[in-house]
Image 1: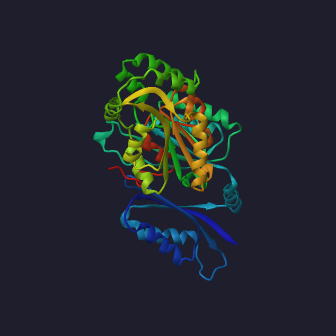
Image 2: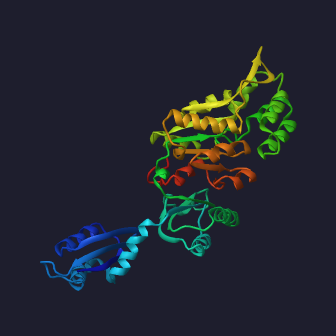
Length: 409
């Protein structure tokens, strides 16, 4: 016969508390059935679920263990308490291991109590049981609270929802209401087993739409920008829109490409993200409906592995207004994603795709994790996940990594 107890130790954290407690339990031949410890600021919360054998050679009871703990910790002013757990309750708890597990990632510049209240209330209303909450972002100095800081909390839940599509829609509406990002995904082995990340280029890796910048140099900025906007919203066919826009660039000197390249800016977090992905040994690719001239430089700068983009025809030092070869459109991006994954011997579940426009939707849907980054409304509403408040490096949080895993420079 075994008696089960939850032993809790709380108070100001000090070095050696866990060691002292487990040594006491060892002397009493206690079985450790579960253990958990967390420290917020300097406040310790340590819990150990133990089993005591009634017929063991050492005659012990929970009162004796508690007394030994209080004696050991009396100079530290720690609170030691025990709670009896029935065998039926323990078996019920063990049975929860078979439940589905999901992770809700909450991202914002700052996470208030109001935000947490609304998010956790929604989870409770869906019957989802929160069993762990972890902060993934680093500690924020007071002087940085209002200076573009970023915050991320990971909430692990058990159970499932009746209609996941409807639940995702409700999360999207709540995220817009609270001005945060909410990502809900299965907490399985694939989440930390991503090995390939593919990116759109324009308005994803970089802030600009390159063709709009070229149009400014050609003096046709307004005309091209209107067509670009229609294409990104999914209102017109991408191939047709690309040819139409490029035709307006006919006669532009080749030197204008370097002029545009010199003023391109990376999106927030791009360099930090790529540095960490390279450290992790992950493969990266640019799949762009933009142009290879710019993609090659970006690939080199960020130490990326693959690039597929469109090629501008240049004759006698001037753009002809034509695109050479196959156009890299939405369907092509999805196909290339699959081909790269196959060449790297990867499952699609191991692939992350990131983009902002309608022509990115096929690859976002094909990847194991598709992320709409600062995307147009159509893309944000269609993609399974979106990031609209933080930089590209927030993708690391969706993969389950904390700032402790990839410290900021």
